Image 1 (cartoon, helix red, strand yellow):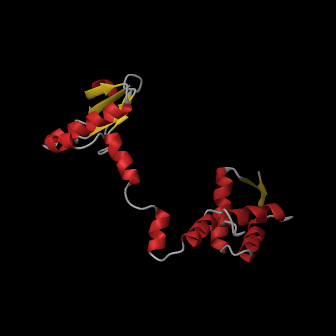
Image 2 (image 1 turned 180 degrees about the horizontal axis):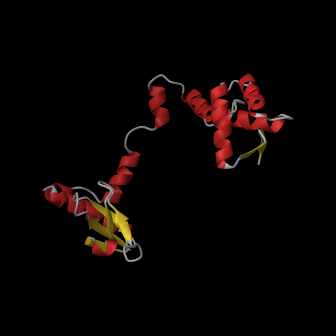
Length: 176
């Protein structure tokens, strides 16, 4: 079940899924939390697309654009048209004189998917794992040799310990 509801604070309208089962709903514009039982329901439907269309019609009416809205396709049809409109990223890059394959390779390296480079976190974790006596100073020194600044290595050690990925006991770190 979908309901088009409105905020009494800012007059925003949005869709609420299963208004009978959820106790509260938060306005997407002003952030006010409302009890769903007390929200004014402008439209209800089992079909999400119908509820979206009703919300669009209500917003058009609220702005005095009902006639213009009547001439426009269904919201779902407009979404499909938007997806088909324009050019895709690859075509845009190539028309701008940029090598799209090089961009893809750079993106994959940045996401850790290639190029053999490791993130700073991986370098610090590997240093802890590789050292016989992984004290903070030894880990920082090893990470610095692999290109991680000392301050960043200390912060990463602290963060990994907080997250529970490392444990620290008597000044020695261990990967969990």
